[in-house]
Length: 353
Image (cartoon, rainbow, N blue to C red; front, side, top):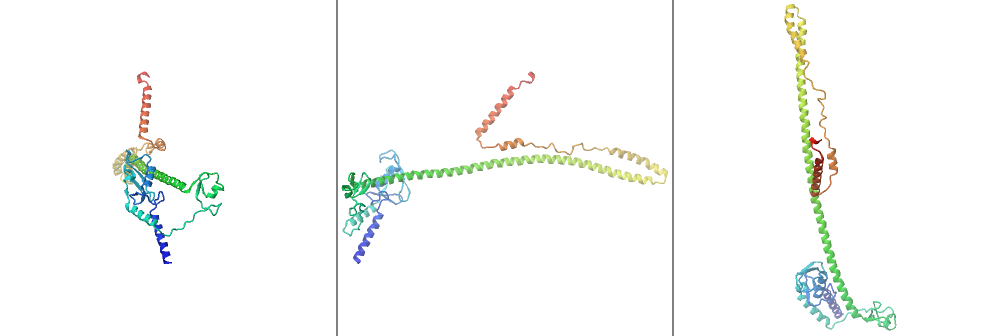
C-alpha cells in the first residue's frame, strides 16, 4: 500500500513539473533553445519568433535593415522591445533547458503509466478512434472507413492531422496575439486622444473665461466713468440750487426783520420821530422789493434725460458673438475697410455737387 502511494505521489510531482514546462504558445513542453523574456517568462525560440513575426510583419531576418520591433508576452501582456537581432538577441534560459533534460530522462524511466481513456467510436463501441476523415473533417475509427459511413471518404492518421492542426492553431494564436497587440496600441492611442481633448478643452475654457473677465472689467470701468458723470452733474446742479435757496433764505430773514421794524415804527407816538425813521424804512422796503426778483432756475433744469445710453447695438453684437479665428476677424476688418473705401470713392467732391 505504501509503495503504491509513493508511486502515485511521484506521478503527481511529474505532472506538476510538466505543467511548469509548458509553452503558452504551442502548449507543448519547451523546445530548445528556451528564451527568457524581460518579464521573466519563458518561450520556445520558435514560438517567440512566430509571435514576433506576426507583430512585426516587415521584419524578415537578422540581416534586415529594420532596427528592431516589439511584441507582448502572451502570459502577462508585458511589452517586449527587441533590437535588430530580434528574438535571437534574447538570453537563453539554460536552467529551464536543464530541467527539461532531467524531466525527459525521468519520464522515459520505467514507472507506472497513467491510464488514458481512448475515445471510442459512437457507431462501433468496441473500436477506438484512430483515423481522421479528411472529407467529413471528423475523427473516426477503422470500421467506419471499411464498413461504415466513411468508406468512400479520404482518411489520414490522427497524428498527421494532429500535428498539422496544432501548427495551425499555434499560428492562429500568434496571429491573435499580434492582433490584440494592435488593438491595444489603438486603444492606447485613443485614450491619449481623449486626454489631449480634455486638456485642450480646459485650456480653451480658461482662455474664454479670461476673455469674458476682461469684458466684465471693461464694462465695470465704463459703468464707473458714466456714473461719475451723472454724479458730477448732480452735485453741480444741487450746489447751484442750494446756493439760490441760501440767497432766498437770507432775503427772507432780512425782509422779516424789516417788517418787524416797520410795524414797530407804526406805533411811534411822536410825529417828528416817526418821520425821521419812515424815510429810511421806505428806502429799505423799496430795495427789498427789488431783491425779490433774484435769479431762478430755468424750466427743465432738474431733468437728467440727456444721460440716456443706447445699448441695442452692443446687445445685438454680444448675442451674435461666436467662436472664430483671428484670420476671420482680420478678413472682416479688411472687408469693412474696402466697403468704406468704395463708398468714399462714389461720393462726388463738394464743388461738383
